[in-house]
Length: 592
Image 1 (cartoon, rainbow, N blue to C red):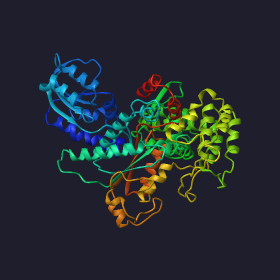
Image 2: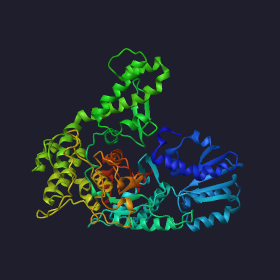
Image 3: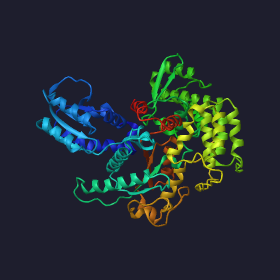
Image 4: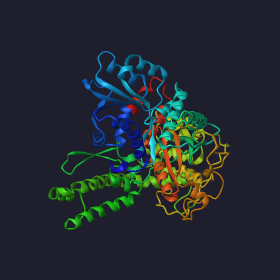
């Protein structure tokens, strides 16, 4: 198995595939062909390698929608989504002249009756197995899942959306498949919001579908609640975290550098185009991704020096060209060095952006977000913090981000003030970047007399942080409160009863070393699953690992329809006011 898949969600997904699809394959000794659609291709490649499949007697992997040579003497495994498009392609393989000897069909989710009946009508005699394996999510990282659906943002938040209800239904189905894969039957809670109903609707749907799923469970015995809690919250709950410039390695890289499909492209010293995939196969990435860029920049050269020393290389300044020389001389440790070269280059790229303009921006952003400066002095006039940013020749995008943080810090501003700000940033034609946040329930324009109570935050004054990284994502407060059983039931109503481990007191602080209490013992091996409607950002993903690390008795898993960067979120916000016809381009972008 791939190194990065030895733990967490990827391991769970691969185990599920092995226990269903692969276990059926093993029953017959013959080699088989595996046929996948776009979603299952991504799913499989996220948790296993071709060599893993080969060792299970799968000889070739094919695309369901590409023309394929018939191999009538071989059996084919179809692993696909239960959509009309997939089922039609499957039927076409057998309807006139069968391409394969037999078909083993596995759906990622529940297959509607009409599609199933169609398959039976044309292909019944070729189908040996037809199963639904309940796996309609992407294991993005050890503790992060997505539904690989950026288009859900428009469907849920656009005032012109035609398919909001359908999208929420689909998200609920997908959340149930996540719970099924983890073998969890969680208690469900949601964040109450007087302006927005989506979290409540989704919680109701998920709870109803979970009840139905476990009533119809293959094991025929009715499953009781497990040691798990599922919290559902909307993106508008914390608009600050996805807009701030983050200085931890992963978040910073995805914000400042154009990384598409987790692939970092860079130029080698010889001018050649190179690329590296940033995923959990790269153990150095796993070690560094949540560290502050200052630590990363310090650690990578140290690691390279260690390797150089072990290879009796003369010590000296670590540069990309020195490494290239070393690699030519000693191919044996090329892989070790290549890994480090990638991160040396990526960290250098991040630092280049940082020293150019991000460093100056960060101070203003942190003061606006936290509401106080480095010394802890309250920011009395946020406009004085914002003005230097507007007067400096930063990019329009960076200025928009600062203006938004200013508005969020005040819980809205007056129409007149907003117009001045928009003129200042010269975005009269693109004011939607700011105005459309109202669709997420975030106050943008308020009357002067309006006073909004800001939610109280956990006191982190004793925690050690970097001056330009003082902000903590709100979701981290929620994770810690949930683990400590401190979530207010008025703010976080129970959609369904929670298992005993999540009730009562006897909770412990996520930040203190402690003796295992009875409560703690009871909760060992429990899970907290958090789902954010409208996308998650990298600092929120990091929080899940930090809280799990601190508590140890509870694993925190976080997910959404997709992962956000500040740029992709602002583009999505701006597009919310487009008419349905114009939105086509958004979906095309998300499917690309």
